[in-house]
Image (cartoon, rainbow, N blue to C red):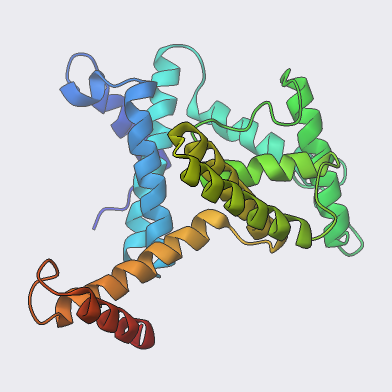
Length: 265
């Protein structure tokens, strides 16, 4: 089997985008039209990792890499940036962000003594990232948190940024109490029948729940994905064992099957 390399992939991408002999679909794409595929490919990588499907992880990583190659080809055509420029900028940024590994700011420099303590590394990382945001002209600690992140992930990132500058609960009891408070406010909004208020209070409740996950150093997006998977498995058990159809079965039978599923899965 022929072995291909990065240069071959860059050449292939240029051929696909060739105005005279390329692929009509690839030629008409732009940054915005590719973006949804990028998100999809990223999720497929995560899905393969969570399922420990390493046979497909290699393929999914290739699909994700292709997204970067696609963007870099468009950037080269427009004279904005190149793949080499992307790599160079990335290496420079990572060297800058890891002074505990590259002490004099060059790729081949090394630390003679042991690594800095984890807390020191984290503190330096945050300081460097704040400096980078300031250099980019970002106004405020929350200015460059991407709008298109999944809502749970974005909530966690917003809370983390706020905590870095000192706006945080003293301990986990604060977020726990906040969840209880927000749940009461959801119930009050439901009783009032105000749908706009219900949506607002429900959002506040979810945001408060994310704070608990952050204090516990858990990823709320991953926690919810696993809850979804658990629900799917248990619901599948019910569908496989119901005496009639799900629609025709009574709630007594469905509740019994759900309890069985909880014991089995």
